[in-house]
Image (tube, rainbow, N blue to C red; front, side, top):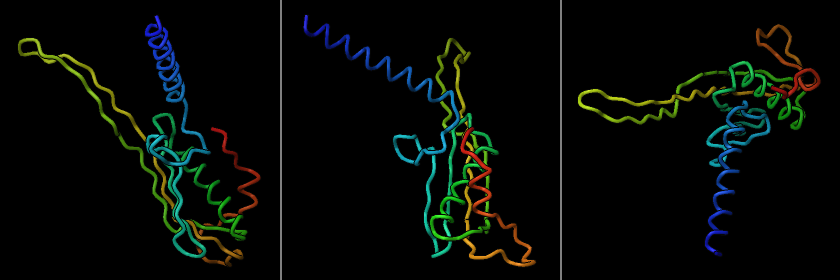
Amino acid sequence: MRFNRVKKLAVQKLSIGVILAIVLTACATPYDTEKSFWTFGKGFETMQIAADSWQISFVGNTNTDRALTRKYVMLKSAELCQKAGYPYFTFTNEQTNRDSVGQFGAGTTTSDILWGSSTIDKETSTVVEVTGLKQHPANSGLRVYDTNYILSHVSSDS
């Protein structure tokens, strides 16, 4: 009797976990996700590389497109620069990729024919090096962003 209740509870927990996983994979990776084992390597990773510079990377799931990853990185850059006291910032390096990852397949053979199916996930990643600026440089040729403007006009909504 007790074994059946424990087994039933385990099945219910597993079912809830599977449903939650399906729901989460149907959405783009949220803005507030920090990259970790538990997020399957998706989300933000930031590293300060100089007193006024950071490397910021964001990896999104199959439902996260290039424009969204770039918007997230732009917003994160503005947040970091504002927190550090820089009213402007520029990207000294930027790269966005959409890669096929996590191919999974299963098949069986019948005589000389292979039957099966496979899935290929895609992930979008953007990596930037951002440098905070104390003032807007005159005629520098750089694209300079206003931290307050970005924070008030760009939202993390997908």
